[in-house]
Length: 381
Ligand SMILES: NC(=O)c1ccc[n+]([C@@H]2O[C@H](COP(=O)([O-])OP(=O)(O)OC[C@H]3O[C@@H](n4cnc5c(N)ncnc54)[C@H](O)[C@@H]3O)[C@@H](O)[C@H]2O)c1
Ligand SMILES: O=C(O)C(=O)C[C@@H](O)[C@H](O)[C@H](O)COP(=O)(O)O
Ligand SMILES: [Zn+2]
Image (cartoon, rainbow, N blue to C red; front, side, top):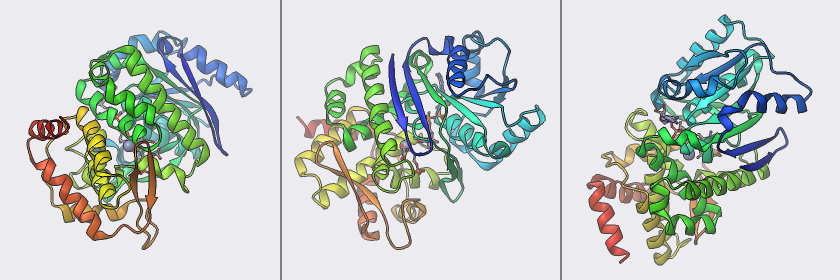
Protein backbone atom coordinates (compact mmCIF):
# COMPACT_ATOMS: atom_id res chain seq x y z
CA UNK A 1 0.00 0.00 0.00
CA UNK A 2 1.28 3.43 -0.95
CA UNK A 3 0.25 6.45 1.08
CA UNK A 4 0.86 9.92 -0.33
CA UNK A 5 0.04 13.17 1.44
CA UNK A 6 -1.40 16.35 -0.01
CA UNK A 7 -0.94 19.42 2.13
CA UNK A 8 -2.22 22.76 0.90
CA UNK A 9 -3.32 25.97 2.65
CA UNK A 10 -6.91 24.72 2.59
CA UNK A 11 -6.62 20.98 3.01
CA UNK A 12 -4.59 18.08 4.24
CA UNK A 13 -5.39 14.52 3.22
CA UNK A 14 -3.99 11.19 2.23
CA UNK A 15 -4.16 9.18 -0.96
CA UNK A 16 -4.15 5.44 -0.40
CA UNK A 17 -3.16 3.35 -3.42
CA UNK A 18 -3.22 -0.43 -3.24
CA UNK A 19 -5.63 -3.35 -3.13
CA UNK A 20 -8.38 -4.39 -0.73
CA UNK A 21 -9.40 -0.79 -0.11
CA UNK A 22 -12.93 -1.18 -1.41
CA UNK A 23 -13.60 -3.98 1.07
CA UNK A 24 -12.82 -1.76 4.02
CA UNK A 25 -14.19 1.61 2.93
CA UNK A 26 -16.54 2.27 5.84
CA UNK A 27 -13.92 1.41 8.47
CA UNK A 28 -11.34 3.61 6.73
CA UNK A 29 -13.70 6.55 6.39
CA UNK A 30 -14.80 6.17 10.01
CA UNK A 31 -11.16 6.34 11.11
CA UNK A 32 -10.47 9.45 9.05
CA UNK A 33 -13.57 11.19 10.37
CA UNK A 34 -12.72 10.19 13.96
CA UNK A 35 -9.35 11.88 13.59
CA UNK A 36 -11.30 15.05 12.76
CA UNK A 37 -13.53 14.57 15.81
CA UNK A 38 -16.48 13.44 13.69
CA UNK A 39 -18.64 10.42 13.09
CA UNK A 40 -19.89 8.78 9.95
CA UNK A 41 -23.10 10.70 9.19
CA UNK A 42 -26.58 9.21 8.92
CA UNK A 43 -26.82 10.14 5.25
CA UNK A 44 -24.07 8.83 2.99
CA UNK A 45 -24.35 9.23 -0.77
CA UNK A 46 -22.47 7.19 -3.33
CA UNK A 47 -22.27 8.79 -6.77
CA UNK A 48 -21.35 6.34 -9.50
CA UNK A 49 -22.28 5.26 -13.05
CA UNK A 50 -24.65 2.39 -13.83
CA UNK A 51 -21.92 0.34 -15.58
CA UNK A 52 -19.54 0.62 -12.66
CA UNK A 53 -22.27 -0.11 -10.15
CA UNK A 54 -23.30 -3.27 -12.02
CA UNK A 55 -19.75 -4.53 -11.77
CA UNK A 56 -18.79 -3.49 -8.28
CA UNK A 57 -21.82 -2.77 -6.08
CA UNK A 58 -21.69 -6.08 -4.15
CA UNK A 59 -18.06 -5.59 -3.16
CA UNK A 60 -18.54 -1.94 -2.22
CA UNK A 61 -21.75 -2.45 -0.28
CA UNK A 62 -20.28 -5.35 1.69
CA UNK A 63 -18.14 -2.86 3.63
CA UNK A 64 -21.10 -0.75 4.79
CA UNK A 65 -23.27 -1.33 7.87
CA UNK A 66 -26.14 0.72 6.41
CA UNK A 67 -26.77 0.99 2.68
CA UNK A 68 -25.85 4.47 1.41
CA UNK A 69 -28.13 6.37 -0.97
CA UNK A 70 -26.99 5.63 -4.53
CA UNK A 71 -26.90 8.43 -7.10
CA UNK A 72 -26.30 7.53 -10.73
CA UNK A 73 -24.63 9.60 -13.43
CA UNK A 74 -24.72 8.17 -16.96
CA UNK A 75 -21.25 7.46 -18.38
CA UNK A 76 -19.65 9.83 -20.88
CA UNK A 77 -18.11 13.28 -21.05
CA UNK A 78 -21.32 14.69 -22.51
CA UNK A 79 -22.98 14.17 -19.11
CA UNK A 80 -20.37 16.24 -17.30
CA UNK A 81 -22.54 19.34 -17.33
CA UNK A 82 -24.73 21.63 -15.24
CA UNK A 83 -27.89 19.67 -16.04
CA UNK A 84 -26.41 16.62 -14.32
CA UNK A 85 -25.32 18.75 -11.38
CA UNK A 86 -28.80 20.18 -10.89
CA UNK A 87 -30.38 16.75 -11.14
CA UNK A 88 -28.01 15.29 -8.56
CA UNK A 89 -28.38 18.21 -6.14
CA UNK A 90 -32.15 17.87 -6.28
CA UNK A 91 -31.95 14.11 -5.68
CA UNK A 92 -29.80 14.77 -2.63
CA UNK A 93 -32.21 17.39 -1.29
CA UNK A 94 -35.16 15.05 -1.82
CA UNK A 95 -33.33 12.21 -0.09
CA UNK A 96 -32.91 14.33 3.05
CA UNK A 97 -29.25 15.25 2.68
CA UNK A 98 -27.98 17.84 5.15
CA UNK A 99 -24.73 19.59 5.88
CA UNK A 100 -23.33 16.58 7.70
CA UNK A 101 -23.96 14.33 4.70
CA UNK A 102 -20.96 12.89 2.92
CA UNK A 103 -20.65 11.97 -0.73
CA UNK A 104 -18.45 9.18 -2.05
CA UNK A 105 -17.47 9.69 -5.69
CA UNK A 106 -16.99 6.14 -6.94
CA UNK A 107 -15.99 6.10 -10.59
CA UNK A 108 -13.73 7.67 -13.17
CA UNK A 109 -12.71 11.28 -13.54
CA UNK A 110 -16.16 12.32 -14.67
CA UNK A 111 -17.85 10.98 -11.55
CA UNK A 112 -15.04 12.51 -9.46
CA UNK A 113 -15.24 15.94 -11.10
CA UNK A 114 -19.05 16.09 -11.07
CA UNK A 115 -19.31 14.52 -7.62
CA UNK A 116 -16.72 16.86 -6.17
CA UNK A 117 -18.52 19.86 -7.64
CA UNK A 118 -21.87 18.67 -6.31
CA UNK A 119 -20.23 18.24 -2.89
CA UNK A 120 -18.69 21.71 -3.10
CA UNK A 121 -22.09 23.31 -3.70
CA UNK A 122 -24.69 21.19 -1.87
CA UNK A 123 -25.83 23.39 1.03
CA UNK A 124 -22.70 25.49 0.32
CA UNK A 125 -20.37 22.56 0.71
CA UNK A 126 -20.25 19.07 2.20
CA UNK A 127 -17.35 16.66 2.54
CA UNK A 128 -16.56 13.93 0.06
CA UNK A 129 -14.27 10.98 -0.51
CA UNK A 130 -12.81 9.91 -3.84
CA UNK A 131 -12.82 6.23 -4.81
CA UNK A 132 -11.34 6.44 -8.32
CA UNK A 133 -12.06 3.44 -10.52
CA UNK A 134 -10.19 4.24 -13.76
CA UNK A 135 -6.47 4.44 -14.34
CA UNK A 136 -6.79 8.13 -15.22
CA UNK A 137 -8.73 8.97 -12.08
CA UNK A 138 -6.27 7.06 -9.91
CA UNK A 139 -3.19 8.79 -11.31
CA UNK A 140 -4.59 12.26 -11.82
CA UNK A 141 -8.18 13.46 -11.41
CA UNK A 142 -8.84 12.28 -7.84
CA UNK A 143 -5.82 14.23 -6.59
CA UNK A 144 -5.67 17.97 -6.16
CA UNK A 145 -9.21 19.24 -5.63
CA UNK A 146 -10.10 20.49 -9.11
CA UNK A 147 -13.78 19.67 -9.52
CA UNK A 148 -16.28 20.92 -12.04
CA UNK A 149 -18.17 20.50 -15.28
CA UNK A 150 -18.00 21.53 -18.94
CA UNK A 151 -19.94 24.20 -20.79
CA UNK A 152 -20.66 23.95 -24.52
CA UNK A 153 -18.28 26.96 -24.71
CA UNK A 154 -15.38 25.14 -23.13
CA UNK A 155 -14.00 22.40 -20.99
CA UNK A 156 -14.20 22.61 -17.16
CA UNK A 157 -15.34 26.23 -17.35
CA UNK A 158 -17.46 25.86 -14.19
CA UNK A 159 -16.03 24.45 -11.01
CA UNK A 160 -14.29 24.86 -7.70
CA UNK A 161 -11.27 23.79 -5.73
CA UNK A 162 -12.73 21.32 -3.24
CA UNK A 163 -10.47 18.60 -1.89
CA UNK A 164 -11.65 15.18 -0.76
CA UNK A 165 -11.16 14.00 2.84
CA UNK A 166 -9.16 11.10 1.39
CA UNK A 167 -8.63 9.18 -1.83
CA UNK A 168 -8.85 5.39 -1.95
CA UNK A 169 -7.36 4.17 -5.23
CA UNK A 170 -7.96 0.42 -5.37
CA UNK A 171 -6.02 -1.12 -8.24
CA UNK A 172 -8.29 -4.15 -8.30
CA UNK A 173 -10.97 -1.95 -9.85
CA UNK A 174 -8.81 -1.71 -12.96
CA UNK A 175 -9.40 -5.41 -13.67
CA UNK A 176 -12.69 -4.53 -15.35
CA UNK A 177 -11.48 -1.38 -17.09
CA UNK A 178 -11.58 -1.58 -20.92
CA UNK A 179 -8.19 -1.39 -22.68
CA UNK A 180 -9.08 1.84 -24.47
CA UNK A 181 -9.70 3.54 -21.10
CA UNK A 182 -6.40 2.24 -19.73
CA UNK A 183 -4.47 3.57 -22.72
CA UNK A 184 -6.21 6.92 -22.49
CA UNK A 185 -5.36 7.23 -18.81
CA UNK A 186 -1.74 6.34 -19.45
CA UNK A 187 -1.32 9.62 -21.37
CA UNK A 188 -1.71 11.51 -18.08
CA UNK A 189 1.19 9.45 -16.72
CA UNK A 190 3.18 10.06 -19.90
CA UNK A 191 2.52 13.75 -19.20
CA UNK A 192 3.61 13.32 -15.57
CA UNK A 193 6.92 11.85 -16.68
CA UNK A 194 7.49 14.51 -19.32
CA UNK A 195 6.91 17.46 -17.00
CA UNK A 196 8.58 16.39 -13.77
CA UNK A 197 9.71 12.79 -13.45
CA UNK A 198 12.52 11.48 -15.65
CA UNK A 199 12.56 8.14 -13.80
CA UNK A 200 8.86 7.61 -14.51
CA UNK A 201 9.41 8.60 -18.13
CA UNK A 202 12.23 6.11 -18.55
CA UNK A 203 10.23 3.40 -16.77
CA UNK A 204 7.33 3.97 -19.15
CA UNK A 205 9.70 3.80 -22.12
CA UNK A 206 11.26 0.56 -20.99
CA UNK A 207 8.18 -1.24 -19.73
CA UNK A 208 5.35 -0.38 -22.12
CA UNK A 209 4.55 -4.04 -22.86
CA UNK A 210 4.29 -4.87 -19.17
CA UNK A 211 2.26 -1.75 -18.43
CA UNK A 212 -0.16 -2.28 -21.31
CA UNK A 213 -0.30 -5.96 -20.41
CA UNK A 214 -1.49 -4.89 -16.95
CA UNK A 215 1.42 -6.34 -15.02
CA UNK A 216 0.45 -5.45 -11.45
CA UNK A 217 3.87 -4.36 -10.21
CA UNK A 218 4.45 -2.16 -13.27
CA UNK A 219 1.04 -0.51 -13.04
CA UNK A 220 1.55 0.07 -9.33
CA UNK A 221 4.84 1.80 -10.00
CA UNK A 222 3.33 4.12 -12.61
CA UNK A 223 0.33 4.89 -10.41
CA UNK A 224 2.42 5.63 -7.32
CA UNK A 225 4.90 7.84 -9.20
CA UNK A 226 2.13 9.78 -10.97
CA UNK A 227 0.24 10.39 -7.73
CA UNK A 228 3.44 11.48 -5.93
CA UNK A 229 4.32 13.94 -8.67
CA UNK A 230 0.85 15.47 -8.73
CA UNK A 231 0.51 15.59 -4.92
CA UNK A 232 3.82 17.41 -4.71
CA UNK A 233 2.88 19.99 -7.35
CA UNK A 234 -0.56 20.61 -5.85
CA UNK A 235 0.91 20.95 -2.36
CA UNK A 236 3.25 23.65 -3.68
CA UNK A 237 0.64 25.53 -5.73
CA UNK A 238 -2.91 24.62 -4.86
CA UNK A 239 -4.68 27.33 -6.87
CA UNK A 240 -2.65 27.15 -10.05
CA UNK A 241 -0.91 30.48 -9.71
CA UNK A 242 2.32 29.16 -11.23
CA UNK A 243 3.87 25.71 -10.95
CA UNK A 244 0.57 23.79 -11.15
CA UNK A 245 0.07 25.03 -14.70
CA UNK A 246 2.61 22.47 -15.90
CA UNK A 247 0.01 19.76 -15.19
CA UNK A 248 -1.75 21.26 -18.20
CA UNK A 249 0.83 20.05 -20.74
CA UNK A 250 -1.16 18.89 -23.77
CA UNK A 251 -4.40 20.32 -22.39
CA UNK A 252 -4.67 23.67 -24.21
CA UNK A 253 -5.31 21.98 -27.54
CA UNK A 254 -6.53 18.76 -25.90
CA UNK A 255 -9.41 20.59 -24.23
CA UNK A 256 -10.09 22.44 -27.50
CA UNK A 257 -10.42 19.08 -29.30
CA UNK A 258 -12.89 17.92 -26.66
CA UNK A 259 -15.07 21.02 -26.84
CA UNK A 260 -15.18 21.39 -30.64
CA UNK A 261 -16.18 17.73 -30.96
CA UNK A 262 -19.03 18.25 -28.48
CA UNK A 263 -17.32 16.01 -25.85
CA UNK A 264 -18.34 12.97 -27.90
CA UNK A 265 -15.43 11.83 -30.02
CA UNK A 266 -12.28 11.32 -27.99
CA UNK A 267 -11.65 10.34 -24.41
CA UNK A 268 -9.97 13.03 -22.32
CA UNK A 269 -6.69 11.13 -22.18
CA UNK A 270 -6.69 10.65 -25.96
CA UNK A 271 -7.29 14.36 -26.55
CA UNK A 272 -4.41 15.06 -24.17
CA UNK A 273 -2.26 12.61 -26.15
CA UNK A 274 -2.83 14.61 -29.34
CA UNK A 275 -2.33 17.85 -27.40
CA UNK A 276 1.02 16.60 -26.13
CA UNK A 277 2.11 15.97 -29.72
CA UNK A 278 1.25 19.59 -30.59
CA UNK A 279 3.18 20.78 -27.52
CA UNK A 280 6.22 18.69 -28.51
CA UNK A 281 6.15 20.25 -31.96
CA UNK A 282 6.00 23.77 -30.53
CA UNK A 283 8.74 22.81 -28.07
CA UNK A 284 11.13 21.84 -30.84
CA UNK A 285 10.26 24.97 -32.82
CA UNK A 286 11.08 27.09 -29.78
CA UNK A 287 14.06 24.89 -29.00
CA UNK A 288 12.97 24.02 -25.46
CA UNK A 289 13.63 20.47 -26.66
CA UNK A 290 16.16 19.34 -29.25
CA UNK A 291 15.25 17.33 -32.35
CA UNK A 292 16.62 14.20 -30.66
CA UNK A 293 14.54 14.88 -27.57
CA UNK A 294 11.48 15.50 -29.77
CA UNK A 295 12.00 12.08 -31.40
CA UNK A 296 12.41 10.40 -28.05
CA UNK A 297 9.28 12.00 -26.56
CA UNK A 298 7.20 11.31 -29.68
CA UNK A 299 8.36 7.70 -29.45
CA UNK A 300 7.01 7.56 -25.89
CA UNK A 301 3.61 8.92 -26.97
CA UNK A 302 3.37 6.32 -29.72
CA UNK A 303 4.29 3.50 -27.37
CA UNK A 304 0.95 4.12 -25.67
CA UNK A 305 -1.01 4.66 -28.88
CA UNK A 306 -2.50 4.36 -31.34
CA UNK A 307 -4.46 7.54 -30.79
CA UNK A 308 -7.78 7.67 -32.63
CA UNK A 309 -7.78 9.46 -35.98
CA UNK A 310 -9.21 12.96 -36.00
CA UNK A 311 -10.35 15.34 -38.73
CA UNK A 312 -10.82 18.92 -37.62
CA UNK A 313 -10.29 22.45 -38.81
CA UNK A 314 -7.11 23.80 -37.13
CA UNK A 315 -8.47 27.34 -36.95
CA UNK A 316 -11.52 26.11 -35.02
CA UNK A 317 -9.23 24.44 -32.53
CA UNK A 318 -7.15 27.55 -32.07
CA UNK A 319 -10.30 29.64 -31.62
CA UNK A 320 -11.60 27.19 -29.03
CA UNK A 321 -8.29 27.29 -27.17
CA UNK A 322 -8.90 30.98 -26.45
CA UNK A 323 -11.22 29.83 -23.62
CA UNK A 324 -8.29 28.25 -21.78
CA UNK A 325 -8.49 29.19 -18.10
CA UNK A 326 -4.74 29.81 -17.97
CA UNK A 327 -5.04 32.86 -20.22
CA UNK A 328 -5.29 36.35 -18.69
CA UNK A 329 -6.35 38.92 -21.26
CA UNK A 330 -3.64 39.11 -23.88
CA UNK A 331 -1.36 36.82 -21.89
CA UNK A 332 -1.83 33.49 -23.64
CA UNK A 333 -0.23 30.67 -21.78
CA UNK A 334 1.01 27.40 -23.16
CA UNK A 335 2.98 24.60 -21.52
CA UNK A 336 6.11 23.45 -23.29
CA UNK A 337 8.33 20.48 -22.52
CA UNK A 338 11.86 21.40 -21.50
CA UNK A 339 14.39 18.69 -22.27
CA UNK A 340 13.50 15.32 -20.79
CA UNK A 341 11.43 15.52 -17.60
CA UNK A 342 10.82 19.22 -17.23
CA UNK A 343 8.37 21.82 -18.50
CA UNK A 344 7.81 25.55 -18.60
CA UNK A 345 4.92 27.97 -19.00
CA UNK A 346 5.30 30.45 -21.85
CA UNK A 347 3.16 33.56 -21.91
CA UNK A 348 3.79 34.85 -25.40
CA UNK A 349 2.54 32.05 -27.58
CA UNK A 350 1.14 33.55 -30.78
CA UNK A 351 -1.93 32.51 -32.74
CA UNK A 352 0.33 31.62 -35.65
CA UNK A 353 2.39 29.30 -33.50
CA UNK A 354 -0.72 27.63 -32.13
CA UNK A 355 -2.08 27.26 -35.62
CA UNK A 356 1.11 25.66 -36.82
CA UNK A 357 1.17 23.26 -33.88
CA UNK A 358 -2.50 22.39 -34.49
CA UNK A 359 -1.79 21.80 -38.20
CA UNK A 360 1.14 19.54 -37.41
CA UNK A 361 -0.93 17.53 -34.95
CA UNK A 362 -3.93 17.30 -37.29
CA UNK A 363 -1.80 16.18 -40.22
CA UNK A 364 -0.74 13.17 -38.13
CA UNK A 365 -4.24 12.73 -36.73
CA UNK A 366 -5.79 12.52 -40.18
CA UNK A 367 -3.73 9.51 -41.13
CA UNK A 368 -4.72 6.05 -40.05
CA UNK A 369 -3.31 5.86 -36.52
CA UNK A 370 -1.62 2.50 -37.16
CA UNK A 371 0.27 4.01 -40.09
CA UNK A 372 1.42 6.91 -37.99
CA UNK A 373 2.57 4.54 -35.31
CA UNK A 374 4.54 2.39 -37.71
CA UNK A 375 6.09 5.45 -39.34
CA UNK A 376 7.20 6.97 -36.07
CA UNK A 377 8.53 3.74 -34.63
CA UNK A 378 10.43 3.14 -37.86
CA UNK A 379 11.97 6.59 -37.55
CA UNK A 380 13.27 5.50 -34.16
CA UNK A 381 14.87 2.39 -35.56
N1 LIG B 1 -9.94 17.08 -11.70
C1 LIG B 1 -8.80 16.83 -12.29
O1 LIG B 1 -7.73 17.22 -11.82
C2 LIG B 1 -8.80 16.04 -13.56
C3 LIG B 1 -7.61 15.50 -14.03
C4 LIG B 1 -7.63 14.74 -15.20
C5 LIG B 1 -8.84 14.49 -15.84
N2 LIG B 1 -9.98 15.03 -15.35
C6 LIG B 1 -11.28 14.74 -15.97
O2 LIG B 1 -11.52 13.34 -15.87
C7 LIG B 1 -12.40 12.96 -16.90
C8 LIG B 1 -11.94 11.67 -17.55
O3 LIG B 1 -11.91 10.67 -16.57
P1 LIG B 1 -11.77 9.12 -16.96
O4 LIG B 1 -10.75 8.96 -17.99
O5 LIG B 1 -11.66 8.38 -15.69
O6 LIG B 1 -13.13 8.82 -17.71
P2 LIG B 1 -14.59 8.43 -17.22
O7 LIG B 1 -14.90 9.01 -15.92
O8 LIG B 1 -15.49 8.72 -18.36
O9 LIG B 1 -14.52 6.85 -17.06
C9 LIG B 1 -14.22 6.10 -18.19
C10 LIG B 1 -15.26 5.02 -18.53
O10 LIG B 1 -14.94 3.83 -17.84
C11 LIG B 1 -16.06 3.35 -17.09
N3 LIG B 1 -15.47 2.79 -15.87
C12 LIG B 1 -15.01 3.47 -14.82
N4 LIG B 1 -14.43 2.64 -13.96
C13 LIG B 1 -14.55 1.40 -14.46
C14 LIG B 1 -14.14 0.12 -14.02
N5 LIG B 1 -13.44 -0.05 -12.90
N6 LIG B 1 -14.45 -0.94 -14.79
C15 LIG B 1 -15.12 -0.78 -15.96
N7 LIG B 1 -15.52 0.42 -16.44
C16 LIG B 1 -15.22 1.50 -15.68
C17 LIG B 1 -16.92 4.57 -16.90
O11 LIG B 1 -18.26 4.21 -16.69
C18 LIG B 1 -16.70 5.31 -18.19
O12 LIG B 1 -17.52 4.79 -19.21
C19 LIG B 1 -12.49 14.12 -17.87
O13 LIG B 1 -13.70 14.80 -17.72
C20 LIG B 1 -11.32 15.00 -17.45
O14 LIG B 1 -11.55 16.34 -17.75
C21 LIG B 1 -9.98 15.79 -14.23
O1 LIG C 1 -4.90 19.16 -11.77
C1 LIG C 1 -4.53 19.95 -12.64
O2 LIG C 1 -4.18 21.11 -12.37
C2 LIG C 1 -4.47 19.54 -14.07
O3 LIG C 1 -4.24 20.35 -14.93
C3 LIG C 1 -4.68 18.09 -14.38
C4 LIG C 1 -5.29 17.84 -15.74
O4 LIG C 1 -4.90 16.54 -16.13
C5 LIG C 1 -6.82 17.83 -15.71
O5 LIG C 1 -7.32 17.45 -16.97
C6 LIG C 1 -7.51 19.07 -15.21
O6 LIG C 1 -8.89 18.84 -15.07
C7 LIG C 1 -7.38 20.25 -16.13
O7 LIG C 1 -7.79 21.35 -15.44
P1 LIG C 1 -8.21 22.72 -16.14
O8 LIG C 1 -8.16 23.69 -15.03
O9 LIG C 1 -7.25 22.97 -17.24
O10 LIG C 1 -9.60 22.53 -16.66
ZN1 LIG D 1 -6.08 15.91 -17.86
